[in-house]
Length: 135
Ligand SMILES: [Zn+2]
Image (cartoon, rainbow, N blue to C red):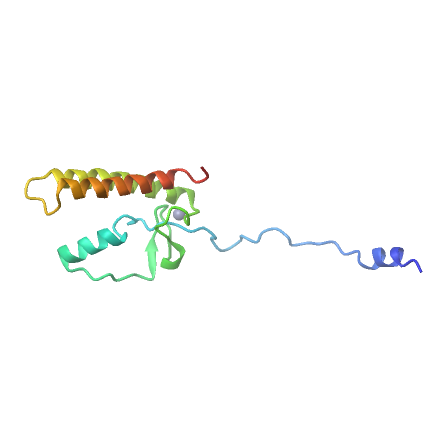
């Protein structure tokens, strides 16, 4: 009738090897170091300005200085899990916002100051989203 003692006894097996599942690979999603340049709007702009084709390399440099497959990177604030990369992306977007605003004010610029303001706002918004991981 009572099998409890038997079951408890025979199923006694110490579980080992339950740690260390992160050994070897990097589970984080990074941003490409050229995160701003890769954004769609900027890429179009660069393509029309310089005739550059959107040629994606298989390995890209990340904001934290690694080289990872392109698939392990994302330009989206809600996808990037590498903290150093989030900080990098935040800084890059802020820097670009300043840059584009400056461009918009330059005489003879191909973009109006209004376009520049819109672009700057968008990149500042992105920067903010990169800065608050769990808001
Ligand atoms: Zn990273």
